[in-house]
Length: 245
Image (cartoon, rainbow, N blue to C red):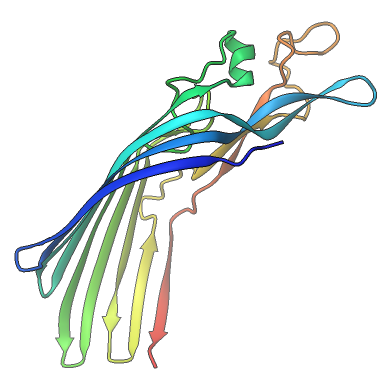
């Protein structure tokens, strides 16, 4: 049975306006104590035929701590130009816990000091909006945003990870009193870094390159692993038309 996860979160923040309100900053620092953390792991289940089935389930693995900060800034340079910059830092690590897969592979399944999966250490978002009047009732605009995420581990044992993620988006158009016409390009650099990865048991045919004994079983009695990836959408572009009532 999977127990409920428990979190105690402590947060301290400050929000301020500078230069007659043209610059806004929002800073938050936090600490999280995380108990009964549930993660995917591999277990052996005894079947009615007397054989064991390797499968992947969610179970409570241990405790972790998270320390981080978030900084959001918005700068209105003038009536036609606005900039933003958001930064996040997260240090997430296990303080208790045992990973059965890690224990079978290395003889030591202790997760203490390992990073919590799917949590990047650094995130950065930069953006800018430029507007230019083209007539008495029409305005052209250009919006650029850039997002950067550092690597994050795909499993508690920290054997595999997803690399740095870079995404650049552009939007440009004309805004009228009631109508807005926009052309956009998302993921301009066509970055193909997966959004997420799930490590699980390969129940299919064993690859010929795996070491097996005369019975066709893996020498270390472990099932081969597979990764299910959630791919990022590639570069795409389009047109949008909006009407405001």
